[in-house]
Image (cartoon, rainbow, N blue to C red; front, side, top):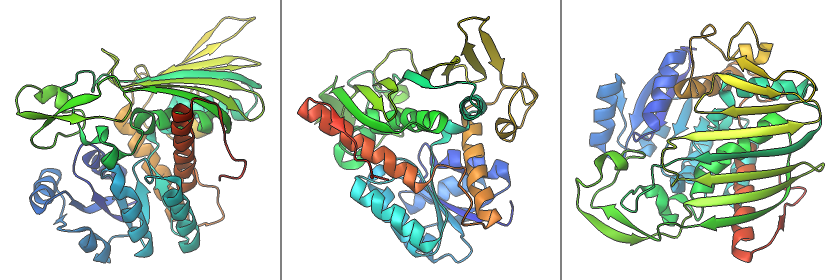
Length: 387
């Protein structure tokens, strides 16, 4: 894939993760843009990149750049994705795609109109055993889905002294825990089951209505390492630390999701259990190389991530033999592989195998329904034609 030339916008926690994954794929990252010229240069030097961009306009003006990865604060996703598409660049954007569904719908249409490839980094789809779970469903071995339950919980915002730009509604949006990690769960369940949400009922809670903001920004997940070492000021918080959502899927299946960023001891734990008419499937991101398969009338199974034991689709996203574990960084690599394989194939009529802008739009519509449900204290119906 060395024929592809990419620029990455964002040098905080997730931007370098993109760069590392692209390097592992053999995709040439020409340069990086940080929040300042100094951060751009420091990151470029550290990661061995040729260019340290000074502005987003400089990125767009670089004719050698064919694709742009956007890994910036949420409020910048829409204007940057729009400008990149208008400049003729393919776009891979971090979630959420935009700050509201009007913006995301516009981006879906712009991507369609330009014919450029546009994706959202729902990387958790690419754990091989999640791909295998989707294939079990597609080939009919799961049967009719009765229910889906699960959670995504963390502890990096457990203390009121924990702080990051994501807790501010102006930077990240009115929803935080749901939008930041809950959408990963919702997207994953859609990718596995194919089910669309028909209606939902949500309850959200802000555990720490006041947090201590350092006098200087804190990189995502780094605040708990640096707490107590810097001066702080109190800041009011309106975004949620916890949320629970009851879900009714089209066709009759039911679901429940719990999201928390204040669950002590859970560093980054996504779980699901899918009950079908033929078997049940359960998976946990803390032990991602095993899939539990439950049976009523036979012994339960524990499927190991092994290319010799899974379907062709899952096998195509495994690079190491069974027992040689793959994890979080590999999901980025595999998501980007699907994205760039689609670009190189050059077939606009082919069904994308990566999360598209339409998938990103779906998640924002769901977030808006979740917020409305919580604020109004009721079930909210999803429009039938929102995609």
